[in-house]
Image 1 (tube, rainbow, N blue to C red):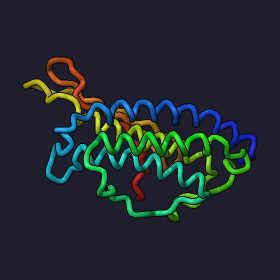
Image 2: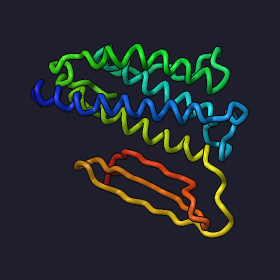
Image 3: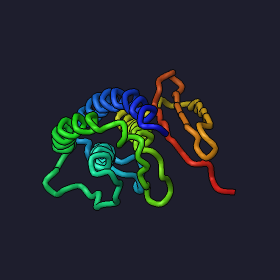
Image 4: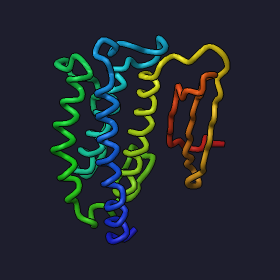
Length: 195
């Protein structure tokens, strides 16, 4: 990928990153503090844990761009964050500081291949799409926590899948209850299982 192509992709993806950030803020802000501990199943993350994962991952991607490398680090929530309002405040502070710096990165940077845990070695610009898909997926998961319980009766599940490369596909799921209300929506980017 040439710097011109990578710069063009970054110019397309970065406004979407900003737009999705605004949506993530609204979803995290909608978590009632008294429901931070809600989890739909004993093995699921709590709403607070999911809000932390969602927001800290966005910051992790921004840091990866600024550092020119993605490194695994301790992703546990700091002890001084006690509720979703604290998580949101830290997210807003860090995102608002870091996105403008990321937006100033050069086309040459965006064309530079970055190693991603031995799995990928793509030009940096393509990881903006990873960031978006990750955020949208987990925000959909968190939104399901915030929706009401489904009405008694049947559930209609609509699943669509689009192959977006030889090894990747994009999945969307919507669950509608018997009253016609959407009770779950999700999206994920996934790899085709190895044969």
